[in-house]
Image 1: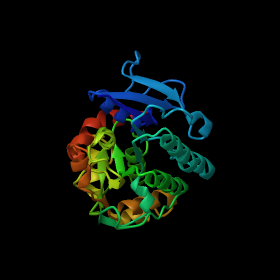
Image 2 (image 1 turned 30 degrees about the vertical axis):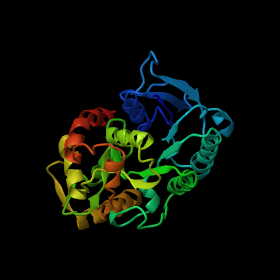
Image 3 (image 1 turned 90 degrees about the vertical axis):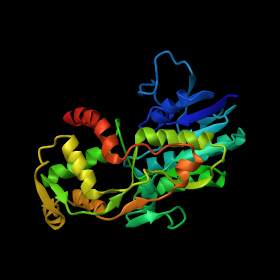
Length: 313
């Protein structure tokens, strides 16, 4: 029996990993939605065997008509994460609503959405389980992604909230840390704040697992590696694996704050790093029949060559 899955954001950082995992899974037929003219993500191949593509733009609900016909599950990975409050609302909130309405109209059995733990706001969060805190978004992007969740949840779907996602193709998380380290010209030490991390390929498998699971998951899930990583461990791994010039230079947390006092944007991100953002949820690996994979240091070492090449540009 074949399971037909529609993936939105199929050329994106996470969506392409969902597609790769799906194409390696017997009995899965893919429909990939993209608003781009070409499929150039690593998960795609030129011959196009094993999947079909459809054009769809969340900013233009009319283009979504018919996209869910004959589909058993929708994995919604597309979102707007940049600046621009109106664009974020159009794509994330209204676009998701239109997609969910189309999925319901087409009698799709399951809807899975990729969201983000940033909908909770700034923290601290220590071993936070779903339901223990209400969303308190601190940015337009997070606000509209929280609004998008409500459309999925109202339709009985599952929402997956990762925290820091790393791996080849990441242009935000680790590059942002490197930019912060560049301001400091040193590696901060003595920061024990814990952060939830997940490798992008593992996240892709978890999203696919949610769509295929016999347990028919619904509601909110936190999807991260079970073991949180301390701030100092994250920064140490980044400094060492990327051979950054400040790898042997250390700076205390208080001195780092003082050094960043004149750079509000960098200071804000440093303050986020110095408090717990640890989101717990053991159900993911049990309910989705998916392994969490290696710990952060091991998986990051595998991606380090890509990061070095990307950052060299």
